[in-house]
Image (tube, rainbow, N blue to C red; front, side, top):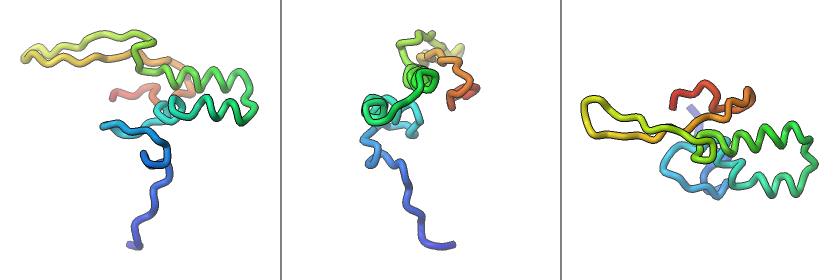
Length: 92
């Protein structure tokens, strides 16, 4: 094995700091407006990025999952259902 490879898209480079793994939606939320200001993006692709940014957030609603054997509860937010979204089909 060679030396460790430098990670591109690290939290430090994106300016996104969370306790969970970095997702495409985090990058779109943090830098989408700057990207749109800098580049001409067709309306259909703007829609995909907007859907990705809203995916699995309170904006799209959700429900509370409760454990049958303990008091643990978890909020599960709805997905955007956009076929281009990397979260589509994710169980996480």
